[in-house]
Image (cartoon, rainbow, N blue to C red; front, side):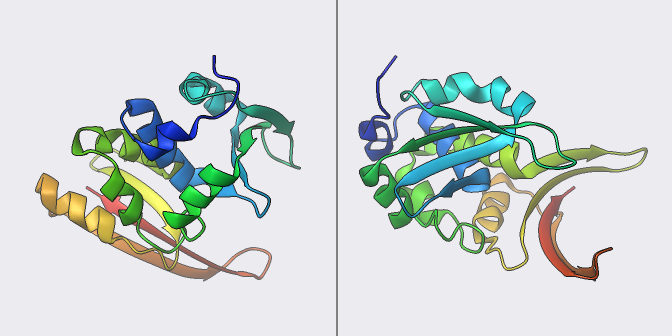
Length: 182
């Protein structure tokens, strides 16, 4: 196992593992002001994929349990060069821009691993009696052009973006957006 997270994996995206990590970090990762990179997920979920992260180096592990929530686990590291790389590729703006900058750097034969990671973070399937859906949830102002591009490339025409604006049970406005594929 590597002692630290190796920047060369990010600089030269050549493996399914780093492509997947970049996708799930786009969905659920966060970067801090002090060069930190973190991924908080439900403990059960992160344990299913933790091995992929250890492929590129040793991550710090933290736990927390928020009120009325399942226990969470965090994988994190601090690295100025990787932090700057992620900012250069819009990870600090991922709630409203498309990941086109990072997708441009991922070879075509590895892009599906990015989307797998992204979907593992922000996606879900719904199967009903007469209906099936694939949903990806994001912020109200998300730029979905990268999804439009892949839908065109895959020949999928029956999809839509749905924006909701409603008052929650605490009287606060909730704005959410998701793209639904049928």
